[in-house]
Length: 327
Ligand code: TXA
Ligand code: MG
Image (cartoon, protein in one colour):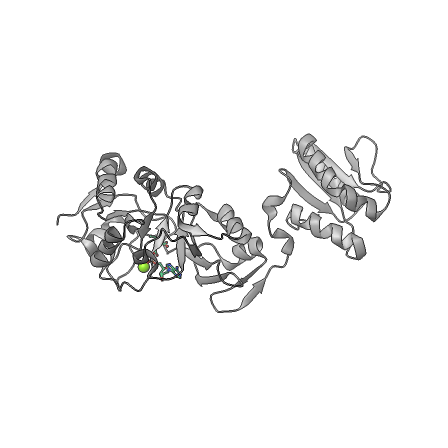
């Protein structure tokens, strides 16, 4: 077998044809080059193992080109898993989810889970999209060899074993994706990578790291930050800070608003949404105020309700909305 290195401009048609006829193709990603085959075609996936000389009991990652493809591969996707995917995909991360029964055993090595990755490299995205099917792909090296970060690395190692290598330059990240198992009780990092435990903790609140240690977020408010208002929001720890931040945002050309109870002292001429007299009033009004604020303004400064009683409960919601940001 002759191995050709081609650019996506020259080779996209041929590469897609190979995948559709059940063959393998090497393609670049931002982490390392991958050796891909149609993830729904068990016979095609077997050719990956042959070309690599890899034992079949090691599962492969399914690479997608659109978030909606996840539903073809996985079931019972938790809100935590969705949050991680929304935050870091496309990018250098793989999530382990419960597999759909459509995924052949050749991909999962018979496990009831499947690894899913949405690479951000342009060539990978264009190629996978044009294939119209997820591609199962390990790193494009023969078993036990070093992962390739250029088309030349692949060629030197796999010449004669694969028909086509899509050229994509040097890989920008250079080590394999972070793998996080989202089916574990506590999301667990199975392989560290460019998406770090700190980055994951900010989204998940809690992860088990590669050493088996449980890491808990310093600001658990970061969890589900995507449920926050559509504009930025901060908590002002004093009335002076609120006024100062308001002025700073005006100077930046923004249209800020302050959310505060009636007794909060702020000068005339400020945009303010009043939350009522008591903490109970603020609790009832806080979500409505956030809705109103995100419609009419583009930066929200909220008063601090302290860390006791109902105030603490209100702050829990405000911290989620603001990602724990204080000034
Ligand atoms: O950056 C990457 O992830 C690269 C590029 C090509 O996307 N791919 C890659 O694939 O590194 P590979 O096969 O060399 O490494 C995949 C790792 C293996 O250690 C495998 O055991 C693990 O992912 N893996 C795959 N599916 C799994 C699953 N369902 N449960 C646990 N581990 C899984
Ligand atoms: Mg590998």
